[in-house]
Length: 113
Image (tube, rainbow, N blue to C red; front, side, top):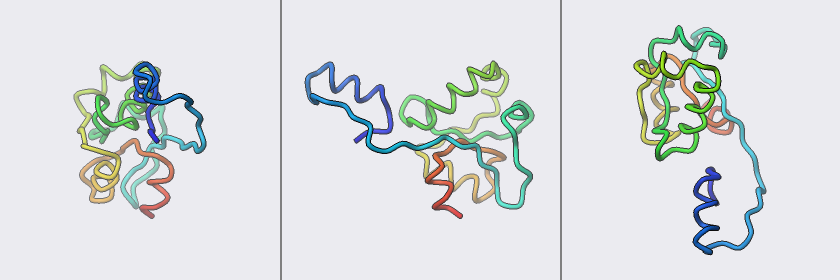
């Protein structure tokens, strides 16, 4: 089970898995600390500290970087990005107010309420 298509493709190429079938899905969401105003994606370039899982090792971080790249703001916001080791660390950083916004999975946001 993997949250990352890249890892699943690598396993297929090495003939370590025969079939790849999605059986659950999740959504990437942008969260802010409790009590802070919601941040729209169109406002992301104004956020001072964006917490993101390391895009090299954290699927949600990679997806977050893809979103920011697709919006055309990655190079602008990259200096404001604080990297975390995993989605739980992103969630904790946002919950503790160590970041102004962060990308996590919807299920993690729901569980951290």
